[in-house]
Image (tube, rainbow, N blue to C red):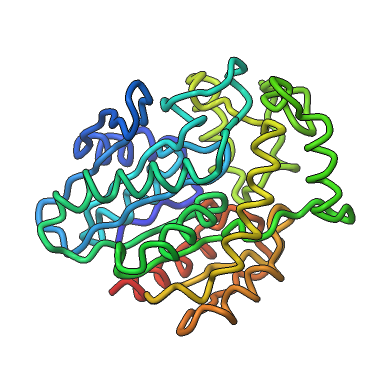
Length: 316
């Protein structure tokens, strides 16, 4: 494996990783419903041993995962990923380009299932198809494998959003407040922020533990307006809280092997919910990464390398 170290990180990403990844990329849009454009990228491998489908997190894009895709390609996997609605180059259902809005959380699941069934699976040539999720993508992915037990062969949930962390404020209080203020068109307004993109870096308060990786991608967001989503809508907050509860209620429906990667210092999602999820999913495995923040796929190499080695060992 050619691991990307912190020395000259941005230079190596631009001169090695980006050309390697994009030279193997096909991209386009699919339409589960008429006039609803969902953007995707597909990364070819000459002799793949399996297929990995990436399900990204809140305010993210498939383009945030190019380092991860670089490792997956080296390991012999074909890779697919999309931009969820409200993110990146996909459909936006509101006017504010910085605010992620979704009418129904199940739209994420339906988009993702359609994508896998109609684009990924027909191209997989009978190879095993694996799921890799981060954060919000973990909630989406968990619901997909609950409702479609054999769509994937194995699943990796990295810091999955199975319980939102609002500090000392109980989730029902947050939900009730959102229901009161989010009536009619106001449901599309930003929730808990002013709904604008801050062009100044703020590594100290981000969800990433690697400063070199944070700086590299932050500069990418400055260059690309499609990557500048940064706030939830009121409706997104309500739907996300409801989705976490719903996914947890049927965790025992999962029939495939699941590896849950837990960030020891996660402040965005509840580790206690992840612990319960692992208790309820028969045969699941939990791997704890102590001292790290939410984005485990963006840690420095002494932590990142064992993280990926564990995942690749699990997938086989």
